[in-house]
Image 1 (tube, one colour):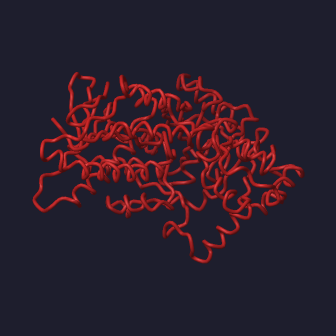
Image 2 (cartoon, helix red, strand yellow):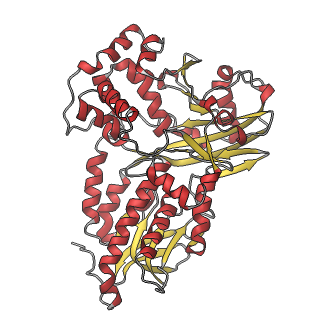
Image 3 (tube, helix red, strand yellow):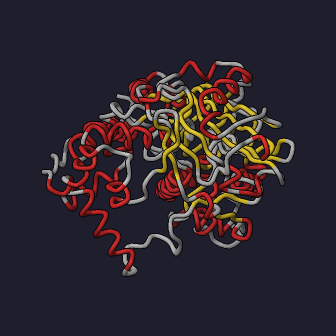
Length: 483
């Protein structure tokens, strides 16, 4: 069968791309026209990818991301269009505090510059580095540098170790010395480019927000989930797509053809589409290319990933000798822990644990300790309790547990990532009708994936509209340039 568009990958990126694409195509359709032929194929038996929620003995355990920030218009629009507004669950005010693990103890992470200067998080010399930040010269606008290089230049080494390193750990499970500042934290890099200083830039941005300017949503940036977990979002997208999704069907190879693109699947079946969207990790997409597309595949294969184990644990409240007031904690590399950090799930979303119980979610491994992902469940749980139990006052054993392993968990936007993307985009121009989307390219959060899905859907829709006349007259567009 031939489709208007075929989306390979049924994670949150593929689902949202198909959702927005169908909206585009149906909006541009005259009344009574045939339904647009859009199909999503997913190799596993479920949709959502790492976005998914499992109920275990009364606990709600998140397999991957645990929420979305409500400052992204595309996310808010999608939630509303799916009729999920009434199921949104904001994070409890109890979870506003965050902590760092320092020398085996949890220390509150100050919320602003003044609090940093008055706290003991940094030494006197480290605090002086923050005070001097507005007076440092700005870097070269065109230069791509690591997050650590940027931090040393603007804030000092101590701030890199105590602040930037754990922040990178919490988001990317990566190496602060290897990841690109412009690619991982483009807004922060833009503050220096636009204002010459992070402190001045944040102060001016704060003034704009307080005066009502520059708001991207009607809400402040508050974490939200749903009453039944974040899997509600991916589940609603999959339900809306219905029979447009086929599970247990992995793509083996792709090639250009007269109809557009031909995909060969794991069961030997072949299907064609005028537009093909690869909504799978870059490392997976790279394995599909051969022949004329080999160079594109080699570029995609250079995007590396961190490996992460997500360990969800439920305890009786009486077995945790701590109120767990806060969001959780992160562990800098200097702590030498295989546990990267912990989220106190039941403090953020109290309804996600049964009455009289608490739940936590630890992340382990990352680029520091990739071998951790291969440990058996009990060994992982013992490691996390040994490394973090004293800090949270753990006295008993879990009454519920789940471990989720990801060999390719989070893409690593290393120095040179922007130049790599430009090269990939240039190669894609030689293959009309082929599109890439997902968290491998321009952002790793759920919000980023939804924004990227909407952007990709717009590009696919415009391509299909442009080639519609040739398709309807049985004159396919020119084949891709294979030179």
